[in-house]
Image (cartoon, rainbow, N blue to C red):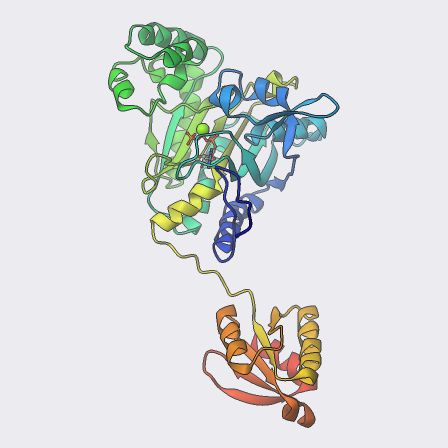
Length: 420
Ligand code: ATP
Ligand code: MG
């Protein structure tokens, strides 16, 4: 160990576990790519105001979880705590919404930062893959996104996850509900911080994880009873589309999201094997966000799935992803001359698109063959002085153990043939 360690609340991704992370990112991205979502990448930091306004001043993220910094030039920046505000900002800046091609469908993958109390499944640096569909109000779009997330999780083999669904209403009906909820909450026995929350973001109180709080919320007014007709119809359509697609979901009247900007469709993917940090992903509609950050009216919907927690979910279900070995051929030279010759072969194989690795450091046959085994390579190439004198290398099938001499000039073609 060096004298340094990864900062509190962070961890390093190292082989072999890091391969699972890459595969999870890929599995989440694949259905999006196949459904017309284009890749977007934005900076790791933004003007702090983008999040303070967009994410909402009253959210936990803005009040206590954001990493902020002042640059030498005096700008106030924040490490991005989430993706939606940045992606929308970037889409507006690039005028993607003006190309007459709405919705603008985008996906992203990256690191996010929140100054949280570190615990299992909750880190200060974590990874998300997300998707946003900007500029269209259409229940089919909400359904599409939920279906694609479901498809991604199923493709990983996950089964113990549930989809929680709710509607948060719109700018017509939500304020009425908000007031009714505040009136109800003010009469409860709650601590100071929660009381403050009643005034700035009362819906968030419904999301309180503490049992003594939840007990008092049984008779809280339900948003469902306050939804306007347009919101009700929209929500019923989303539900019907999901059902038609065979996606199982649970109506969860208490579901709200940590961010202020959500309207109408709201959902969360929870996994039952993760204990307290059970949310593996979440999202919903954010029809007012564009205007909040100074853009035009662009009703949008999106989600973000947590890569870290998805990997934990795989581990909780005992799922080992079927990751193909990255190395197909492993070369083991015996002696100085063989080293040069075989390294030439390896370089040629790599250029021909065959994944190959090499026993570096002039190790003996036994240790080198162990490395060949560990690499998962399907074939080993072994050559010593005598082989070279005959112009051949020994090609060993690591599965069957069969070995045969192949002329040096034919190795590449032979391997290409065998590996298909
Ligand atoms: P939680 O209620 O657990 O705090 P959240 O509502 O803050 O989650 P979102 O902002 O919706 O989470 O982020 C989407 C996903 O990103 C979460 O479902 C989770 O998988 C992941 N995520 C969020 N915060 C963290 C974190 N601190 N560490 C690891 N993953 C996280
Ligand atoms: Mg959170």
